[in-house]
Length: 310
Image (cartoon, rainbow, N blue to C red):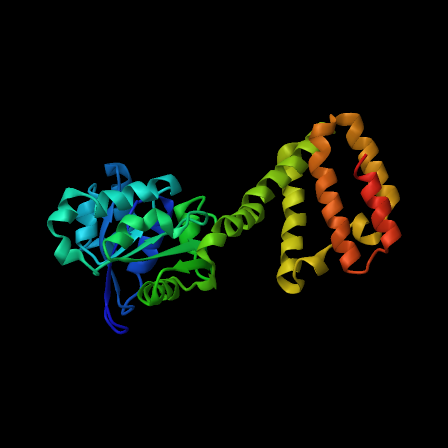
């Protein structure tokens, strides 16, 4: 497992993440990384993974046994749902098969999980067995395998590791995936993951909220979403060029308190107080950005905060 040695890996879990990684890594010729096995709970997911890898599936063991897959490689990528990671790791390293061959496994493995929120503690059974551990979390949505494999290059990965060997291998894997790395301390992972949820999941909730507002006044949801997505895409393009704070536009950025009063009056006509909390909270945060940008003064900030607290 030296710097120039090839790395044999197995993938535990053939869902959207595991299959996407398998597809991408299996196509990297001369990378020094070779997929030896893929395991999953169901024949259906194994069949799908094999079909996705196509001709690159030749020579790969597809199995429903996680232990069998682990024995075929020295680097284990656990791509299961978060709550199953510890169970899978314990199954491999605390199981009878491992105990019988412990001397042969000692200091052999590196074990990785791909959860944004889970610490390395969920891999403790591997650590106790002498393995190094790491977490590689893609800041990416895996809504479908087809879309994920097309958009994987350029993905940023949050990297947490226990030692030099696991760091080196993790960086090699990310390089093969054509990704970039940000280092995340193990004890800060929940906050790191919360930010990821805001940037992904909460955008869905915000757009859905905007569609609901339109629907309340008779605008067709499909037509509403088409227009709102165009607006959002333009904003995201601005953020790519100028960053978050300087991309702010709209009435709050202009200090247009009269427009915000009109918004609040109209919202209260159509919705109960609990349903307009999102607008008020996000409005106050937007006002703070405008103030930091020096686009509005302290008096206007306080006036906006007062309107948005009512």
